[in-house]
Length: 481
Image (cartoon, rainbow, N blue to C red):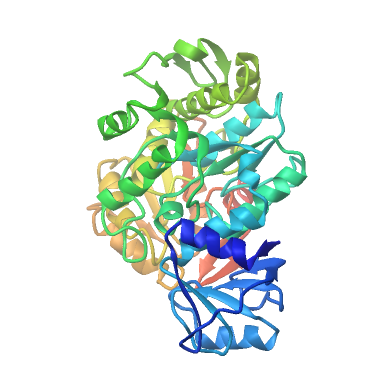
């Protein structure tokens, strides 16, 4: 519950309050009003709901429908003149986040908060942290792959970082479920649209940076993308940063006066020896580690999670056990065909992560390699050129371009755009299952490999704005082993 007085005080303290109007006239009769629900969905309101008007596509009729269901107040950046009081603010997203904190009783103060950001690896690192912390604590996790608020039930999130009203409701549920820690993936979008406004993390981890999410509805430039990523460091008590990432010096300068740990070659926290399923570390995590996820970058993600969890109460023994236990659906999953060839299924969905994936597979598989790949429609358009140029540099790979959440675009047109940067012939097949089947048919011996990249464990295809059912890459690959 929250009162109108609390609401206005929060907005005034944040210098975000303008006035309260009804049909353009100033309104003063506010005392004693209480709200027992908050919502940004006009279909989910009652007389005691405080409603937030958000989104560029919001229509006045949504508000009128909510009023017909009893709505008495709303928070907005403009007065829609619909006959009920409008609490006017300069920034609706800031208002939502701070009011949600208060409404749900500040659950963020009752949990140890760990956040991961980076162009890639957030989910994997979050899984490592979850398995490390569960050894001696009771973590909850908000992840694009799987979210759990009780340690028992897992479900897939729609957004990498939930909208603020949903985020604090989930935090409150985690507290009610007696969780001690919360692990989150924090995207650049979370800061761009202020889903985590006003939130301070106990530990923030920056894994890496490469150009991504640059386009008309995301970030206009790489600088803007990197800036919003770096806001996690500014809003964390302590930070963990990859010293081998691009533009590391920018971050090193930014966090010089914060508690911090660096890992990688420019730090004491290094991976000293590395094998496919084990590594040795120096520095704070000195010791030997077993790991199920192959690839040096996965070992780096494990070290990042270990350093973060060390600050949050985990022991070295917890870290060793947690890393050894970690598997991630759709992240470097490996299947074996009857002819011995390997099938690698991974979420790699931008140029940099695909480059690393190819490097790992080429290290272990010396025969022919086939790649099944697509690129999402209506977002991340810069990935298409990145994919094409990368594959042009790998002439030995047989390429099968196909659908990967084409949305409102034609998957063959996307494939054509990728292939325009490749001078050799490639297969272009809109049906993803057919592309996987044909790629798997190219193998003949144990040294061969098929890489199925992009969708990971997703069991849907986004087509024309709708999530259509899709069996999943692993399920399809198993049909043709």
